[in-house]
Image (tube, rainbow, N blue to C red):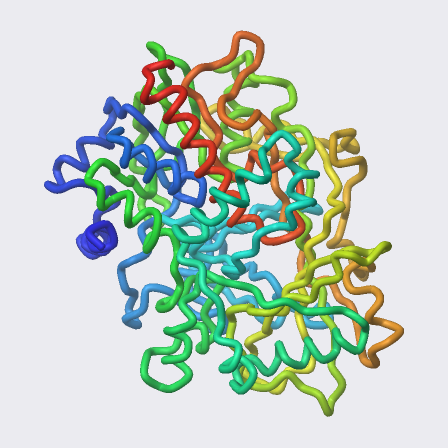
Length: 535
């Protein structure tokens, strides 16, 4: 509670650094030349877990976030804008929004011109590839669909064979779900509400095709949603809010792990602080940080030193920092495997067209609660979330994001671009020969259709079409090991704590797994390195 209040007070005061009172102390912890025992880059799932557990162990911790604090209302009195009425708050420094599920029959009917601004959703394009990222204190938890799904234990073992699956499912997945405040929709209410008619339609059609469905938990507060539906609370999920943030109901990290971390009094969060370089120094590291305001105006550069450095800037941010450090010679002994095996996270947006007499309804909750489980299909295994279009009309088009267990991979490297050293992340032209296979998927070529998800639906359910709505989101995987980055002699006190550790698709939305792995890994780091003094 104290942490959430601190975040709100800092944003209302126009500050970018929030931490223990007094405020001057928080600002001093993030000044140029400052020293932090532990420095965490990023504020997403792995980073938030790490900061909380370090602080609980008595370690003073500084977190750096590229995006801004999202607690200050705009001119309309709301912190976030809706999906159908996007403004500059929606998008990270673009002149036009770049929303997922933006097209209908390959026509862009959703995106709008916007003023360049430090908005909440970023899309990073790499030719035929695109990565969506949340920009703000809370990272991807601010903008994702919130589906809190634990992967199949057998497939988890296949993807992460060196991790003790029994321990994960007995200890760390339950801890992650509790920390994220995962909850589920009331089944009785689901069966009767107009807001989930689209899910019931999908369930019926999936059943006709011989597929089962399962309910999906979420980080959205379903008790709040029922109050929305009853007209007893301001609408959010029932008012077309999701990918640009929810003004109510969403249990994002700034209300869970990050709030708890700030409540310890040992964590400071510096927003609009972008880490751009790492170099070793005096048994620890120095991180170069670029500052800006929300309009993009540069405010200067800092250097902050630390003893232990935890990289939690997401698969994009973490991999870019490591590649830059290796290629520019500040961390030359980093392994050559960093940047290898750039593959999709398995998520591909497809859709089916319902028959005119079977529409999905005008009112649609933006929070998914149902999945089509075709995981055991011998030819085309897929797990597809049933999502809304939230267009405010009697929708005949049903988006079905599918997660595949068979991603493809490619390499990444540094190429000429922006940044203090003139380098940026980019894909190599050649095909990858990595642990996830070979080849490059080019889903955004004109007229291309994705042919794998729910293919068995076609001969059994009339009216089915499949269209690709956006390129699959990609995950960059440095594959540095479970706790420490090591290569040759290695680099002590340097850790990766985010989705960059996950080697490929988990077959479901990955954030619960990322959270659970972070819980596991930081527990070991504390026990083996920090609390024992072994660094």
